[in-house]
Amino acid sequence: SPCYTNMCNEGAWQATKILLSKPSTGTKARSSSVLNRNSKLYGAMNALDEADVSSCWNSDAASTTDDGDSSIYYTVMFNRSVMINEVRMQFQGGFVGEECTVYTSNKDTTSKKDMVALDESLVEPEDVNELQSFDLSTEEAGKRVCRTVQFKFDSSTDF
View (cartoon, rainbow, N blue to C red):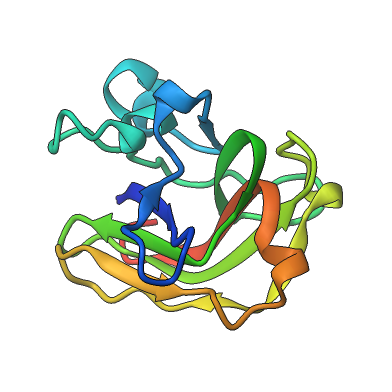
């Protein structure tokens, strides 16, 4: 299952990347699914834990909603405005989220109605156990400035 590791922002082009998703900055994470509903071991916040490299978010099979959506969602709420230029994800080998769409919102929300899909929103993670980077810097700046970023996984090698 996906292990979301970090979200970075390059403040100045030559500057070191700044980790925006540290829980110590007030960032929170939520997901639509947690393996066996065991949030302590597999909850969304675990994926933001830099101190424990074995800590990650594990999703369970998605249940279909009233509107027919059976996607898995992972949402990071920064609780402040940030500009995202790059997203980094790491998955367990053999278990990768596929067909991943990236959304942003200027609100502290998990509501789909408040999300805007990035124009270059489809990222295609590979089925490897390496940290993967996705450049969002070509996206319109107004859409990259956000308070919330959400990842929608329409399928996975383990759903």
